[in-house]
Amino acid sequence: MDSLSLTASSHVLVLTGAGISAESGVPTFRDAGGLWEGHDVTAVASPEGFAADPLLVWRFYAQRRAGMVGIEPNAGHRALAALEARLGDRFLLVTQNVDGLHRAAGSERVLELHGNLMTSRCTACDREPFADRTAYREGVLPLCGRCQARGRDALLRPHIVWFGEAVAPGALAAASRFMDAAGRDLIFLQVGTSALVYPAAGLVEEAGRRQAVRWSVNVERPANARHFDRVVLGRAGEILPELLGVGP
Ligand code: OAD
Picture 1 (cartoon, rainbow, N blue to C red):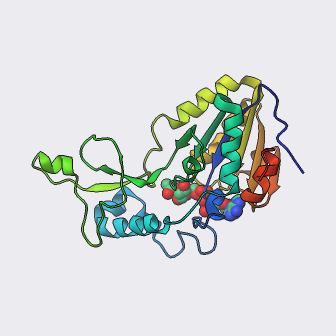
Picture 2: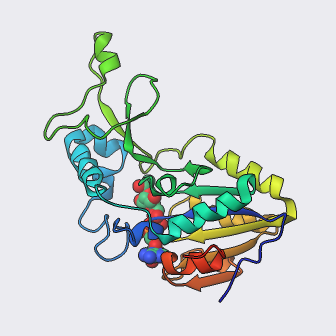
């Protein structure tokens, strides 16, 4: 079986997508039966959609929140957490996932590029995004308590990056700094993403410009497969423990 062949100076930058959570029971977006099947993406995942029908958008995310009850990290998440425990600051995980499963598995050096499903924020004031499972009650648009205390009504929204919005501020710069620090010792590992959404799908090219060894793990070839040195086909939960040499 393949292995990343880590040395004492290897730095590993990982990009994950919905595929790594599939074996935990979280639906992906674009596979058959995925989240975007049967949904108008613009209606539920864009600022325009939220402006047009915030209740529809809240219903969609409330359903996704409810769907996370009882969901646990799988062997793929755990393998990445175990690798981080070994590498420390020579490890960085950038995820497009909003499900929080990497942190639940013990990962700490995690950048959530597309936000977090269990977090909300105000559409008007600058309060920090906050952990939230309960603000939305069926049919009632949740308002910001802080704004209400100041005499105005402002909607809360899920802390999710929607189409047309910028990814988490600072995340890409942090990934670039990590790659700079790695020098010629960079390994780039992309897991479980169709690689159709930018800027995440472009990270491999940035890694390539820095001579990184680039691995993809996915059940199918991702859209950016041509940029990889090794394309491993298979399920993340089965492949990663062995590939990373951290056991099941
Ligand atoms: P996609 O649904 O586009 O792609 C998931 C990928 O994972 C597909 O290539 C699957 O073949 C693969 N896959 C499925 N099961 C797998 C498994 N067990 N092991 C390994 N791979 C598996 O999801 P993403 O690429 O994450 O953005 O989508 C990117 C972004 O598009 C999401 O973050 C989301 C979406 O619109 C926002 O919501 C902003």
